[in-house]
Image (cartoon, rainbow, N blue to C red):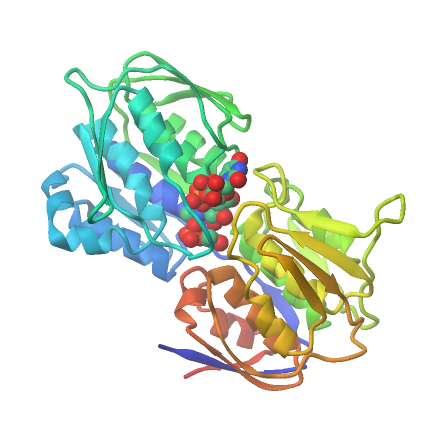
Length: 437
Ligand SMILES: CC(=O)N[C@H]1[C@@H](OP(=O)(O)OP(=O)(O)OC[C@H]2O[C@@H](n3ccc(=O)[nH]c3=O)[C@H](O)[C@@H]2O)O[C@H](CO)[C@@H](O)[C@@H]1O
Ligand SMILES: C=C(OP(=O)(O)O)C(=O)O
């Protein structure tokens, strides 16, 4: 397992360009299975999770032609669905969360889709019921083998049939999976309580460019008129909003002047304003974000009635749960107190122990809530050795280490590499002292 050694307490300066979005790329790559024609995807991040999914597609028989860096042309004209029943697939398919989204396209186009319990972050219960209830609503037969946690769906004779459905929760990957199954079903499907984050909108736009008929894109009511088949397309992945939020937090906490390039402002939702509530200055400069050096710190804004600021996650257009760990770490050096409420996942806040070891003032109220009492930089965090439990806790600890005085070590950095491309190299380019060992 790799480690990062970080010498903290040094302000950074310069420009950083966000990578293509991991969570969009996972949806988009699965969608290439829906057609036998060529699909060219641009701005694909070079990160562990995405590379694992590309390998999986290759093992399923999808042709992969690498163009310039970040651009790949896929062609799923000779898919080997039999691979789903191999031991190799049982291992490979469970290695990441995003692989669950191969099931919808395979079911729609080849009549069956199987998946072992998918991996991804161990951040609490991660159910798949929404996905499979959706497929069942479209007429699929479902089976689950409890012994090896293997899920399977098969379409009835004559294929899937569109229907009206109300999802039990606005699951992101669940909505993507159901939409990818419904585009090739007979008749009309409506999906209410659909997730509607920008990455799902991107998926729907891509599918429409392949010939699908989806309306309501961007809302929580999608209407999908099934079509016979889909064709090829070219698609560009948006910048990663979670990476953008990570760089905002990094800039504030290390008192650095940073420009984040080409962020696609219209797709950032509440992210900029949520960081502004912590007192961080965020300037819109064209499509860039400019963050001045917060030499005198940043002060938390209370609510209008003076009550303590609460930052909580919610399905889009609410604030994404993937940035709460970063907000939390940034709050440790703010002037003022913040209640962080992680509503979706029950094991995502436990990493605060490590921040407490570094000298942060945090009270973990229960698995979902933590009160952070900011130091206002009056007491710098102390360098330490820590291990990254999940991707976003990992980047939060990295930000803490870059702000702390002295040399810190972060272990288990594969968790960070899962979602952040060449992070050490890119941080060194703006002056960070970080080495991979
Ligand atoms: C590969 C990928 O795209 N992963 C993202 C995706 O995961 P993923 O699609 O797995 O997450 P889901 O949207 O299914 O839900 C995540 C968790 O939130 C809970 N939940 C969900 C919806 C809801 O309305 N209420 C609710 O409480 C679920 O019970 C579940 O425990 O979306 C999550 C929520 O934005 C993000 O954290 C993940 O980074
Ligand atoms: C939780 C995340 O990823 P995954 O769903 O792939 O585990 C994340 O990106 O923060």
